[in-house]
Image (cartoon, rainbow, N blue to C red):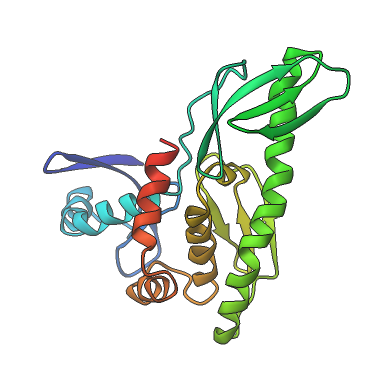
Length: 231
């Protein structure tokens, strides 16, 4: 069942699931869902009371995951429109030509094609190819640095994720959102370091935060920039 509580000016929606457990547990997922698991027959009011006590922590977790929610505005892919690449703004310029290509030229992303309807597809392919190259170059020294903890990702893969910038699977595979190529290098480093820290600490505990701060002292700056850059 779904319900909510009011904590000051904040409304916290949550999903309640009953199970054969002895204590009540509260989880905030990377998709910004609040899930409460409670013993069978626990009154809803008791659940809300416990959630109210944990509300500051819940709100902090929701804010933490906000930086992993891409919010890039919808683009029409027409000449003159601005597009981001590695943290800088470029204007899209469509050029008529039989040999299709996408190139950076000065302050422009120049897309050559005879069919305007193909501009979006060509740019998406261009972003993806550049993501593969850039992410690999940025990740290599960071992965090398984490070897002192005797951990390394099994692989780094790219995948479109509407609500996340990155993730780390239980088997150690790091997945990055290609859209991250639109952000500055520091933001990309932050997301990669964040996922590398998950190879050591799987939850967002204080030990996780301490490790992330140790490996990137100014991570909060890049987290905030990522939130604002693609908002």
